[in-house]
Image (cartoon, rainbow, N blue to C red; front, side, top):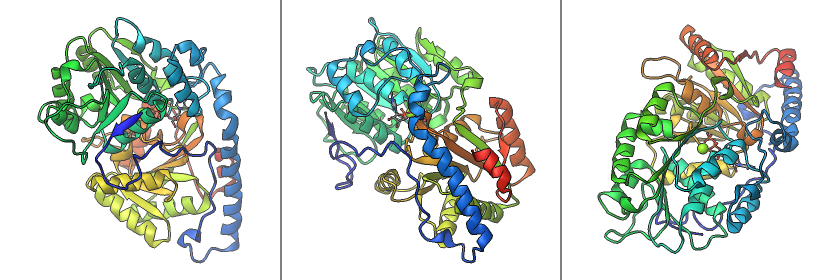
Length: 467
Ligand SMILES: Nc1ncnc2c1ncn2[C@@H]1O[C@H](COP(=O)(O)OP(=O)(O)OP(=O)(O)O)[C@@H](O)[C@H]1O
Ligand SMILES: [Mg+2]
């Protein structure tokens, strides 16, 4: 499996097989006391107890995947093995080489539909971190005819980082299919114009994919036989993405197979998707199935921005956390928070949409490799990013839509950056006004899940909640 890439030289992202991370969540000792200058004895005792609690709850993770895969109520459960899904031997090798033992529910259910003959369309919903990427990557790798040296599968995702990540999964999974090649249609990847790509699979963001199909004519859209939309709801519901996705879709033939995946599909998006996708198979979750039991959700009452910052420092000072992602509403707030955390002595990285692609690639790579333990970001990283060591997600600002109402879908995706494939995770929401308390209530009602109040100064309560 090779790939076409002309991106940032020496970035290390695209050379060979991407590094895998240890399966078990590692607990790091805080390096420099996080800038809390005058910690008294009580603080140290608190810290030690809390570390013990968190460690206990994270260490239990080790066997959890196997336990969950045997539990019929879990989204990771399957009755079939990968062999029974009738994958080609070289793909089976790829899957086992990635350390997967059994398919998850979405993989078990979606793969036979995606590989059926004649081809069938699919709109599929499955909880965050349950292996949707592997499901559609296996479908693409099974679908292509390696002897044909033209693009046959097109996959689009909303962000640069996510497109890269999906490409890495395809590369890993297709490691034993040397004939199958992949190209990245992402910003910064300059391809010689005028001749058609030979790569059978192209993964990219909608703008660049559209350019490659129409402006540069690197891809013949009439020869695409499988079209995959990851994070499909955002691809068809948000203005910019929708226009581009529809324009790509229009160029494809009517019998091109369409596969739509996401953890969330708002009702209006379902209706729209069913109009666009002819005669689809549908895999849909009930509302109460959308949230994961393995992610515990809390809120902390604060007064204003500075108070939220103090709460965050207290939380971070008290808990020993593998890695954390902190979400802010605006780039400005993310930059403010990042600067203040750095001033307090924390090692933090910032990722927001206005950065150059080289900067973005380097920040996410460093975070993936654990070089920075904390990533402060905006909604640009709310979907799809898979860093298994993330054990805490903080909503420094709660996710709201244009009208200031709760953005339930973004909430679910953000908290889903933790609790990957059965691991345990914590999501903490900062509440700084009556309005943000209302938002928490709206989110609770929408998913019919309790979000528990967290008082970091009450150790007994913490022990109960976090155990
Ligand atoms: N069958 C499997 N066995 C073990 N691990 C798996 C399996 N399938 C996927 N995984 C792992 O699960 C993690 C989450 O997978 P993935 O990123 O595809 O989730 P997702 O469903 O796309 O989530 P999101 O909705 O957040 O995008 C990855 O680290 C992946 O390697
Ligand atoms: Mg995904």
